[in-house]
Image: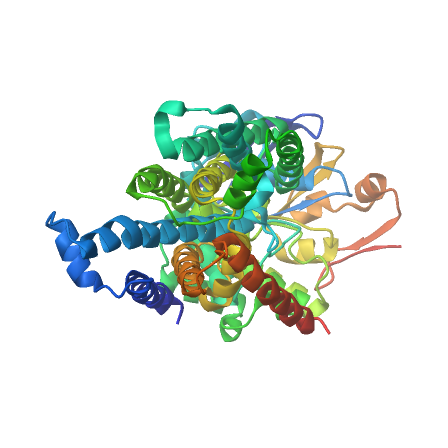
Length: 242
Length: 328
């Protein structure tokens, strides 16, 4: 079943004629150089930007959907996370329930367990390490139990352990009947974890499909302006600059 | 503990309110006075409690609640612990409106509530100018526009003081600005209570927005909250609360700034859970401060606004020092 579908999506001069779709149970990685439109695409899919073109969530027009309904079905984990007050982890995670106007303790506990932050529940979030905070932001989105989870560079600034830990959680969430779209810079991890990829260049889709269709060395070298070595036969796959 | 905060503060407020009815220059039983006043008997007790202490107590509570709530809402909205209700220009607008009554005799038919009416009009005008100038509800723009309007109304007030027709008029205005809930009646409450209810309702309805904003505007929007519309409603609610309280009681310093700082650690720093306790603590503090004013030796009256500033400033310094220690 198609979860979200975008046709000829345009946003000012930042996105042009982007078309993509994501099926239930899949994880889609959006890749591309800085400024290629990854964050703009994710924010458009979250319904936060004025867009042109057709955008449908489970067949329903996303633009005509009330904000709260949309927020219940789409969760966004932004790139730049901030917290203004010295909030406890459990309170931050509970904010994921704001669209539902409840404090579903089962959903909150389940999200904290999935993200591995249950033991941090009573700690102040501003006293945690970057890796721990990233898992808290993820737990906050998971607590809303959205059918589509959008994560904007969720593993940026994380060490190798936390990168794999967050990617595992995202993939597991997708494979349990939801959908995940994430913007990601690490092409090796993208190849390893994502079911499909969408390569953006200057606001347009350069290629999309399975990893072996998208991660072609000549294409990547052209898009990123640097020679890139690709070996998808290796486990885990290797995509690194030469 | 967080769940018990509001009930405990409500009990504290009830105790302070009863204490406030007891304290005064005459020894009067508040229960006898209240009973006489309610049954329409014209006894001395009824007059002292019903016409003097009850309005004064209720006014102090309403003003404190308005200031505490507006401080909590504004700090949550602007995500800045230094945000003060005076920041959006409503206090200065109200003061200018009151000054206009002293000098130009506005609202002559309104009697002694003319000052409050003009203050409310001044606060409303200042708010309108601020919202037009700010253009959006972004924290930086609200702070800058509020500062600009505060400066403008402050300059206008200074001009009015400069050209005061006589020193008595100036003295009267300055004393009024120092803040007090004495010599006011229940008719002042008819101005303050609707503003408190409406402003409080506007702020309360946006409590989810205040919670969401603590994770940033982008997250708040993604949670289905309307940041622009909601922020404007919070600013409107705060202006109503502050404008009405300044109009009725003059300038009562530090309550709006300090109370949220006192309450925040008790509610886990959540901006949505701080609202009601802040209103209750604000009401208790102002009422308590007014009791202290009444306990001062007779002679020259210490103004309520002066006392809250004298107590509030060192307390605020202590809070800043305590927070600063966390970073050493």
